[in-house]
Image (cartoon, rainbow, N blue to C red; front, side, top):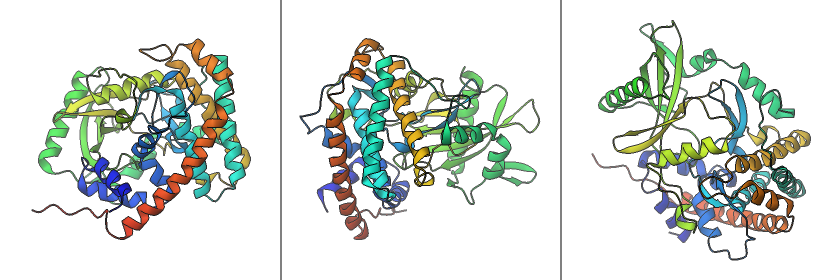
Length: 406
């Protein structure tokens, strides 16, 4: 077994074995998906680099890549385009977030067969817009009225989607009652005892939490698969029905929280959070313009979880659908640069992060940009070699998860 495979298997060892097998299968799809699933490798390797330019401390989502931007419905009922994954969030040098994103540009563009010169131009554009936004010291937000190009179309579609769409897609009627579908979705049955405990737990959360929806009860529960890096975590989807309005439903996602994979590899002192889920939603609330609907935390069977409303539409912008349209690609990368800077500005000066003046000075300084791009481009080559090694080991059966004995 290669050293790489030992690292990957050690990181995934605490996860659900049968679901980790699905994660390993997903990682075999292409180098970009492999990169998305191995955030821990990126930071473990980055910790050995001694020539990274200094940058101010900032709250970062930790796993910023092209497909960790997307749409979501805020608690004000409006739809936004923003950073949307905070599982790995920590206090760290601002440049860490940038290098993770830049590297994703080089890997994704190579995977999609887009010319290297375009990847370089997009990396330069991202940093140019990020720096310009930071230098102004004023955060921006993107919603249907302010969005442009493909992002405007993306948000308009999200805004016009309804719960009827998601009900049609994710449920079936059984004995004149709606239940979550198992067929055709990445849903799995939950055993009876666990289902009873989960139902009681969420009904209690609805009744007692200020973050929960009023006058709803749990009607159906499934185990849910979603994402790539988070495959193997415990994750459940709940269908809630209103107790006072006919045919009104909500979908609620409950996802297990783990410590950030950055923690072993950064020297910055972190806050002592009550739970990992509290860390995740607090940083999310600081960095996003408006919090996601029903964003909350809970502890179930002594494990921390993040709760939020499931979106009526697919909420991640897939680059493979715009790879042939340079104008759309340019607009999306430009937006991502502005949103990354805006998230750091919003959370500036809070519990260890740099104040706005320091972030503005960093944006005005151009000396560090070339170094970050150079590192990201070089590390993209490392990821390609990792992926090749992974595929050799995967095909030889190294990542086959043994079925537990009855």
